[in-house]
Image (cartoon, rainbow, N blue to C red; front, side, top):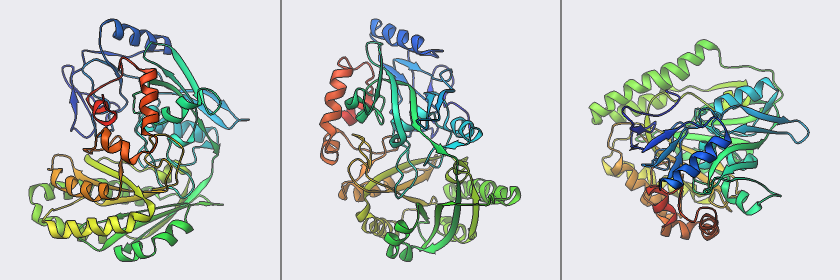
Length: 439
């Protein structure tokens, strides 16, 4: 996986390969001052500005025909405060580097998503999350933010300082300013025991409330065309450390999850009729396993098979109905789905446009192999998700607009009013923001 998503002759491309853009120019600022100057210069030239991380979003949230800011040089840890138990990190730092640096210091984030290639600012600005009973998205662990606003000035915010900006900017969609540094809450490093085991689809749904209540982090994957799921429970552990052995890890995570899976995707793309058979074999190939390791090694896994993804947050109590409807739709449709459906949860949080804002949420993610037609499947899934007042992940494929969001986000107007104040001339505008936030 390349560290940045980019292309030839001035064309920018995202990781999933479904979004391209041709910026007027690219800037790689080496300091916050240089970034401020680039924003002011863009205003003089009448250009819009967008910062782009690793391009892991499947939407065009980072696309621009104006000035493309690459934050590669704005990386590293600025400060670790062991009294406050926080770490302040530059916006362009990849989550992977942050996790490794924290581990060396005996520290860890409380929760994480399942991919760690993204920059900290890209991941938080789009609402990236893992799964958790009490612990929420990566953005919900933010204690302070520094951002360059439309006039080039630097604004800092926290619960005590510019609290209205803090409420919104933790998941700011790139609409309020360019994040330059983030302060995260951290805790002493701990061990997690992961227990992965297959479980029938009907049993997972019947026992979901109990599985959710009994585990700090519960998630599962359902294999379409089958009645099978693979469940994963992560809970804190006193140890000892028992990582997945190198050979087993290579076999299960690289060979099965990336190598064989990649070949299965190629076969499925070439001959869609084989997909249900492949799905049945795949769902049976996974055996139960238990391992204990430091958090980021348990939460995250390599994703080398490229895909396109849609994910919606529905109220947690609506999960069973949502999934049953999705299964019925797939069974009746003649669609051939070769990627498992991923299900996770998050507690309600207080971030204005967080997918879990004000409500306990369950996430349902549908994927298609890159290069296969995904529209029919995603359209059918989206119809089910929106019927349950679903909120799409800001960085994943969806067709919703500002009118829809104003209905499913009670604080939507609070965000757009703040944007009017911080970016009246729409310096950070692009087509995506025009659609989701309104003109």
